[in-house]
Length: 76
Image 1 (cartoon, rainbow, N blue to C red):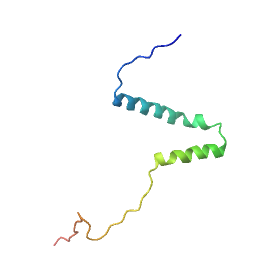
Image 2: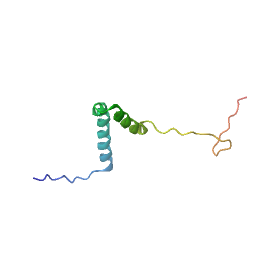
Image 3: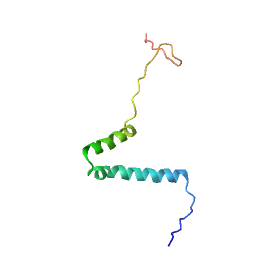
Image 4: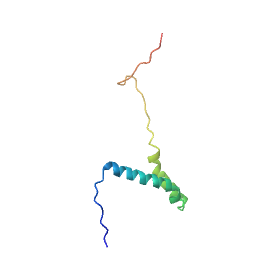
């Protein structure tokens, strides 16, 4: 017996909300999900997830005379 799929129009906002909720549930269950894995496998998974939690750090420098530069003055 085939089950018919409801063809209700789904908006992008609805889809994003559903995916966000699914990800929140999975993240809450992550310790339970990976507890039976070998330590190296568990570490591998955590390392792959790390870039999504901590963004890559980039060096920022300031050069004199850059557009939008402001002067720091002293009050007299």
